[in-house]
Image 1 (cartoon, rainbow, N blue to C red):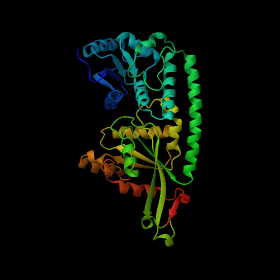
Image 2: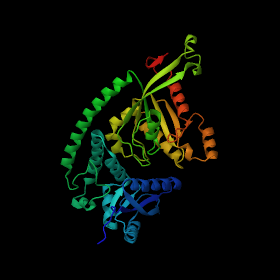
Image 3: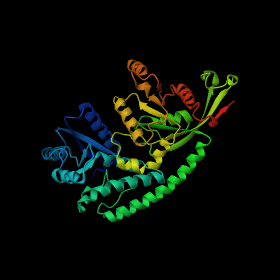
Image 4: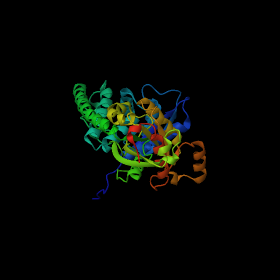
Length: 392
């Protein structure tokens, strides 16, 4: 009898629709990203279905005929699950399961599953469980024990894993308990942050998931934070110290007294590596990760890390800007940092430097452009809070 040396990956059909109002390239980029999410979750996307419709079908999202077709396609590819690149209602999910005979997950469920497997700290696990239960609670309405058909695998794991037949009353009680625990952790985090803010500048690394924030943190602070080529590798905020020095001769004369021109400035900085953003980041996660995102909101300066080698970086840039606005961090000073320039063709890089002339271009992995970035950070910090800046 042959034994498998590796657990077989769960096979997915992915599906989405293009409406008259959609940009086709945006839809294609989004479903490619969904397939990357499935890969990160440990599954395998084996076939893609795109349906052109005027509007989403209120009962099945993709239409009953297309759903039946997907059931046949799944048999041909030995797929057991269907991933829809949208947020589905409980009834849409139920109808699709009945028509296709497959486990059905939407984009939100897959993102939550990845968060569940990547959470390491107590706070991270509690936050993910809260997000999962909030999502599950809205899908129990009108659905009975057929939820148990989902079985195991992607979409049913992690710190928030719950018996799917659990009633809404028990979920509601658990959600209340989680909120109380997270409130106590948030109070403790706030006390620590307020103590830090008295003596050091607060800088947060923000950006689309997998832009290279953790690699940059390691490069700036010579630390060893987990940095992998994987979506949502960092969930728990990681804080590291950094001391920056800048010669005052390079500071505009109207900022400092003439007598201090031969000195240099010293900045004590605390840098936070925060969870990456993604298009259509589930509302449940934004709410559950409130205290973690608060690190961003309370920052003196943001470093917006952009993957210059990603063909969708403009869309990613806009998603980050929109998310910062949503969490109340749109007005915090920021520096745009184009990362991974070692993987960008020279001609394209020159165009980017002209178009985004106020930005810094680096390769955190290769250590390229880091001194220029430190200089830019120091310039940005001048005048934010003179009490935190030491003059020697």
